[in-house]
Each structure stands twice: as C-alpha cells, then as structure tokens.
Image 1 (cartoon, rainbow, N blue to C red):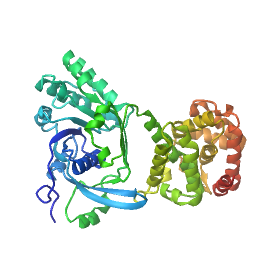
Image 2 (image 1 turned 90 degrees about the horizontal axis):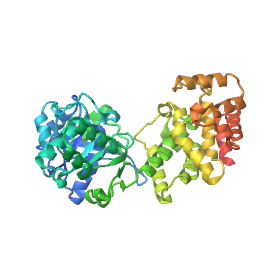
Image 3 (image 1 turned 45 degrees about the vertical axis):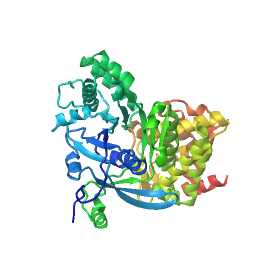
Image 4 (image 1 turned 180 degrees about the horizontal axis):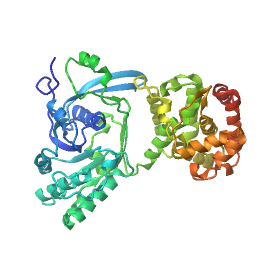
Length: 479
C-alpha cells in the first residue's frame, strides 16, 4: 500500500506566507484546515512552514509525508450526522529548530511571510530568563519568535511592510497581548535597540484570540479500518468535530487580509472579544456544568444521552435559551445560533463525553461558569432563574456522594469534599443549603442574602432527596 506524500497523490503547492509554531493535532485540525479551505475556495495561496516548538515533536513524520495528512471531521452538520475526510495540503514543510536552527532563522528572510500562528500549550507563552539571543534555539516559544523577528528586522532594515500579523491560539486570556509583552521584554533585556522595539510596536500586529473545536486527535483504535478506507498509509490522521469557531481581536485591517467570510468559515473579527469569551463560558461551559449533577443523578452517564432524553434535554434547552442567553450582550440571533450549535455538539454521535469526566471541581466551575448567569439574570429580570437554581440544588445533592445507592467518585479540592461530608452528616437539608450558600470561599459572596434564593434551592433539594432526581425534574418541568 502506498504512503501518503506528494509523489503518490496530486496536490497543489502554495507560497510560504505563514509560519506556524506547533505541528500537533489541534492546529492541523483547526487553523490549517481553515487555511486549506481558503486556499481551495478563494485562492488564498498561503503555504505554511510548521516549526516544532519543543525538542520532541512530529516534524520528521510531517516531512516524511511532505506536509500532507488526512483530516476527518465528525459531527452534526446542518442537522445531519456526518463524517467526512480530505487531505490537507497547506503545510509545505516542517522545521525542527533544535536540529536546523539556521533553516529556522532563514524563514525570516522570506519577503512573502505575513502571518504567525501558534499553539504551544498554555505554558508556552512565558518568559524564560535563561533565554539568550545567541541560543540555537531559545528554550521558550516567545524567545524563538523574538529571535526570528529580530532577524527579519535586520534583513529588511526595519521596513514597515515586513511586519507580521501574529495570531496565537494558546488557551490563555489576552494571548496576543501577553506574547507581545514578553517579546518586548526580551528585546529590552537582549539590548536589541529602540528601533526594533518600535518596529514590534507599530509594524507588527498581535491579535488576541478565542479558539473552539474539539479535536480528539489521532484515532489509534480505528486506524486499521481507516487505512483500508483511504487506500494509503497516513501516520498523521487527525479527527475533529464539525463545529469550529475562531474569534480574532485586532484592527479591521486583519479581516481584509484573511478571506474567511467568502469561504463561510466561522471566524469572527472584532475589536472586543470579551462578549464572545463570555458567551462561550456562559453557554458552552455553563451548560456542561449545569447539566452534570442533574443528568448524572437522573441516571445518565454521557452528555449525548442527556440530550437524547426528553426530560433532561428539555430541561437543559429551556435553561440555556430562557435563563443564560438573556444575560448576554450579543444579538439574539447570534446567541440562538451559538446555543443550537452547542446542543448539536453535545449530541455528536462520534464523541462520547462522560458526565463524570467533566465533574472535576464542579463547585469552582459553577462559580465561574454558572453563577455569573444567576446573578446577571436576577439583576436584569428582578426574578430568580429557576433552572439554574435547580442545578445548584442538584450540585449540592451530587456532593452527598450517592446515586441510587451507588457511591459517586467525587473529585474536588479536599476542603470542598470535607465541607459537604460534614454538612450531609447532619441529615438536615435546610442546614446543608444554608451553610453552602453562606460559604463565601465557594462563591465569593454570601448567596443566602439574595431574596428568595435559599428558600428556592431548599425546596428543590428536598424534592430531589425525598423523591429522587427523575421525579423531581419531571415535577420541575411541569411547574
């Protein structure tokens, strides 16, 4: 059977315009797929040079396949379950700077280079005091990028049109701002001069981003059947879900250079990404956290099964559309579309997401993902969000540690586990609710002081304890 490379399949080659730090599953199923779509549909003509950001990586394997790999996208698309695949051809070559540092720096001399993309893990955007300009290579990703940018500054004599658009994908807040700050810190400590620092500040654009696509990665357990289906050997097959979202915060000029809209890609260009970050945390993450104690105590183990159940599915949909969405400041049509996309993602038949796998530290997750919706709903509506408070009651019941006589493997900070064990030992539901709501370390405030909240949560918890989650939830939906 033939191996996947550019001699065994016909694909296009593209002008190297993008340098990409990271060759792992996420970028190949996310950013590189979008670049591939733009190359294919609107002749973006953007080739990628993939840089291996750490000593161990996939560049050799990538080069053995001439940058090619097969991407499977699995999930619900336009209401239908779809699995589709294609060869992604935008990566032109890979460089391991630990073996070929000169080749790495030479990329800076490319006059066509325009974009930098990165995904080097959350810890990747950090300052390493040991890094020096003369290192080959520097240890940190920002150190490597600083050296490359300085080389470019020297080669093109600080030309303003040779600055780059930097789009990091690391999962930290203000990733672009933080990357720029660290690069300027290196520039100062390495004495690279005020001219270089001004060039970084004025001629390079650092975007903050929000990325969203579930990428299970290499489907090891299915490779025998996948290879048979493809008819060639591919050691870099990667799987991702159908949904994708890339929010890029930067000047309007960035949108002019990335033809996402013409390709129907879900890339949002904005000068303020906070509403989108809040939307993701409140709807996607908040729905997960809202669902976990309710669905699990109901007797369901998986996210998909929760949506397929009429009672639990109806509860979650009602809570998202009626209580979470009204607390957000984006157009209703955008919120509804995003919410429907979230529900489709939860229903994805190709992904099995265990409720218990997302139950870790549920108390702190409730504080950051759900409580803001509770408080904002009360502020805007002058009423209690009953669906979210039912989830809070379910959370307290969840931390009793019992599901129909089966012990729940609770995972949280020890102080939280000790607290609930002590409270539930009293057997007094009213006391458990009162102590939980008053626990400022959990919530950052005394929730018992909110008018009617303690009484409502107590009523729901008593029904869950006395009648079981199934009966309690069915009664809740009737009222």
